[in-house]
Amino acid sequence: MITPVVVARPYAKAVFALAKQESQLDSWDEALAFYAQVIQDKATQGFLGHPKCLPGVAIDFLSGLAPAGAPVSVKNFFRVLAHFDRLLLIPEIAAQFHELRLREEQTVAVKLIVAKPLSDAFLKSFQDALQRKHNQRVLLTSEVRESLIGGAIVEIGDSVVDGSIRGRLSRLSESFI
Image 1: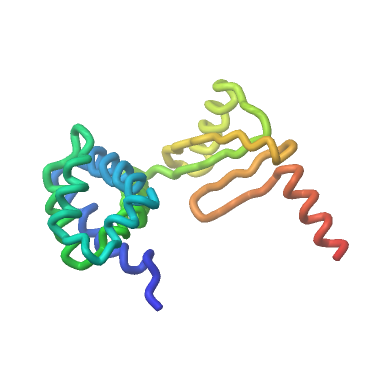
Image 2 (image 1 turned 90 degrees about the horizontal axis):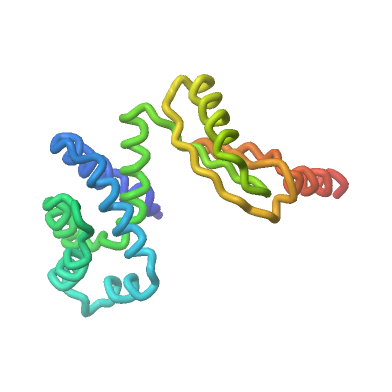
């Protein structure tokens, strides 16, 4: 069975090439992220996935929600997706587009999950250290998750380093089983 990731890939690559050609990587990335949130809503999925929802109606609906600064060619992209019944793939297309953009800009996305909020100074020094280590620009986001108890989880691309106390306790308990 073909997964949404595989089906979305050629669309993401095509729209990335278009956005790059038009020098609109930022606006396309923002527009796709916006529409990814819209599509992830259960009511929107029900509407767009309904057999009686014609492609023209779906395109008009989505075009009417267009955020300010969205490229004009977004509507044409929706026509292609609607024609092939792929509108519900927009969240996956948006994620893949974003990854392509990060690669193009030699940027790595890093998510730091911690038990307690960290100071801006610490986050800046952590970001600087990662930039030196990876020799790339680092786009750092942080999230507070109190259930970790202490320590941190670092997600870099597909890699996850779990240095949290909860993670350590979990691994310790599994070793006794």
